[in-house]
Amino acid sequence: MSHTATGTATGVEMPVGANLNGLLNLTGTTHTNPGTYNDTWTFAGNTNYNMASGSITDQINSGSVAGMINYAIITKPVPGVTMSGAGTIPVTGTTDAAGNYLLNNFGAGAYTVTPSKPTQGCSPVNVTNGIFSDDASHVARYVTGMEVFEPEQIQAGTVNGLGLPISSFDAALIAQKVVGICGNGGNRSGQWVFVPGFRSYGSVIGNLMGENYLALMRGDVDGDWSPTGPNRPERPQSAEDIKNAIHMTVAGGRTDRGTTLTVPVKIDNLRGAPVEAYQFDIAYDPRVVTPDAIAADVTGTLSANMSVVYNIVEPGLLKVAVYGAYPASGDGVYVNLRFVATGRSGSRSALHVDNFFVGNGTAVTYTYDGEIVVNGSLIGTSSGQTNAE
Ligand SMILES: [Ca+2]
Image (tube, rainbow, N blue to C red; front, side, top):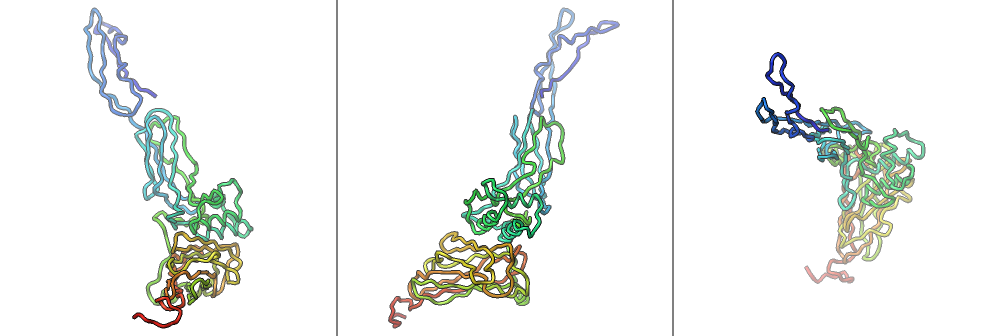
């Protein structure tokens, strides 16, 4: 909407001054965009009055839009959301640590403000924030009628990009995101959704407050995404804390080159707590061992009624996620890993455990690495004799 300065011009005749408004020209003062303008007015004059001109300062104040973005499932501020206002003059802003945003310097006319936030990394950089194998278990329980979801949890759990209603397929896709498998079924795990998706304004005049949104990240159905960044289980330091932690122990062993070694992975010290889901990474030496075609298998283990998803993210890094509608329980072997020994005789590879999460990841865990040794002497003879060192 344009603005024009107004003014009047009155003659000095007595007793009533002549109306000289028709001689006053203010057309140079018309503006539409916010800002401060120094304009010239002119008075045309006539036989009784001289021409005149002068300057006038005009100001059009910019409107503003402010509000807050909160996480929908568990209320917490969502920082780092880009707020883009499309209109005559594009405006942009970002939510701060408290989830607040402020947009100003709007131009004239209609605007549409749209929030957006980058999708959480899946591959090659897999960000671990809010999306865990436990979320896959929640979805598995929901679709089997064992758990009640709020509408926004259903929205967060519907990660398939195929337009299909939430199902166990979505549980599988969430678990795939956990291990860095990203493309199946149009997997939307890690994408942000805002409610409303945008707000439209016929014009932004004055200061609009309380223009709030709710946010959710697809895949995080229990709402434990953290505004301050990726979270991971606390690693105990004291002997007492280690004693009280949930333990994961990766076995190891010796095997001949070219053969496959089964490596049991035990979870102990649960003290009766159910295991609704778990996930871990194994770092290994790819010059010595290679994951088998079936690299992780729950058959015959305590988590035999759960589903396992794994991925070789890069040579040397295996990610494993296990989830299901029905929790496992009891101390013992939960999954078997399989590695083919590919290194030369005598070589060895650590099986280093990292990022071991049980359930929602808040339980304190402690891990024991394993090692695979390829049979034979390091100098590569089969005689067992050593003729070096
Ligand atoms: Ca979660």
